[in-house]
Image (cartoon, rainbow, N blue to C red):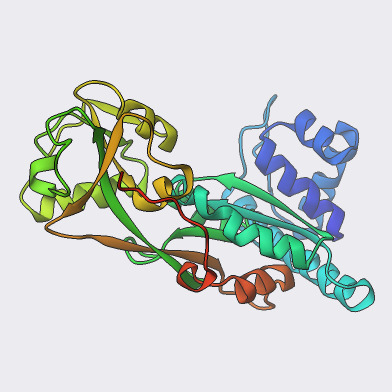
Length: 304
């Protein structure tokens, strides 16, 4: 068994197509197919369901894939460690962030890039479930996600900041002269909220349930920017994080009212896989990122 065979298997599982997998690996399709067959012969199991097209992996193939991804991840970590000893820190970090935390990404990436200019970073907007799954599958190095709402498995975490919530509504609307609004009052409004596959929405639904309310949003979106833009429409309000408005400002013609009773908060932080050996780049990013309360970041006032 050689590493190249495992690389081909991983590519095939991702692309779900022999030709596309071969192109991703920069080899011919016969070369990739022959390597998979050779791996099957060496292990004595059928890895790929046979057919005219790729039909998926067998049960044994899924088990082989899990081991293959672990071996490939450890091989990458070995290369990173050796490169760090020989040349200093270099390589690539894959960082996944929940959409509501994207405004905070620069707080993490900018100091790291300044200190380690030879390291490239790829930032992806993902749901919390996708972050957990991709870390499990060795497809992400670091995640920025909620830490205290839904369970996380097999990860090491570091709190970065507390997410708080405001109602974004028109200045000339019903609540334009108010300084705060309760969750129970907000539940009666025509709301624009994130879609239910987003953990932020599940958090907000949970807070509403805690006060005996069950709003029926008029508009649902998977974009935090759509939340802000819809709040400018007559009769529509949105629930957004204070952090989003502190970094991008309150849209013209709208007002941000802190949501109270309760004044809810959720912890957002970095997670990395709890496995050994610990990836050097992920370790360094986790160690040097400071909680926002300690970082003295510039912020925009949200109250006009």
